[in-house]
Image (cartoon, rainbow, N blue to C red):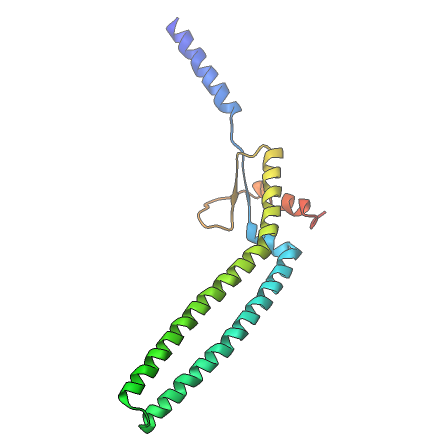
Length: 170
């Protein structure tokens, strides 16, 4: 009797295990993003913004560099007293600190702008991947553009479905 009961438990376990199979898929997000036209537009806008920030920073750095060069020339000529040199060096150091702070601020502005440009695109793709995952009963969907995968079957590549949902493939 115990053997029959044990056999029934094992059969029930095997049936439950077999019916609860997990389905995995993957997507190469870099590949998908390279085919989305909005990404090229966002790239162009980000580049223009970065170029404008760089240009404004270059003007400020050039003005600072001129002050440093003028200071060094005066020191070389011997036209500055030691106290005046020390005071000028302190001024230049403070200005250099302000430049570093401005550089960090401009980098943050660029990062924020880039985030604002790409966020809607990434959100749209994320919603599509989640919809495909739910509609096709995937347990997990991985991003194959990230390192760490030993093997990925082509049949589990969801990029074609995502591109189709985006209207980029028929």
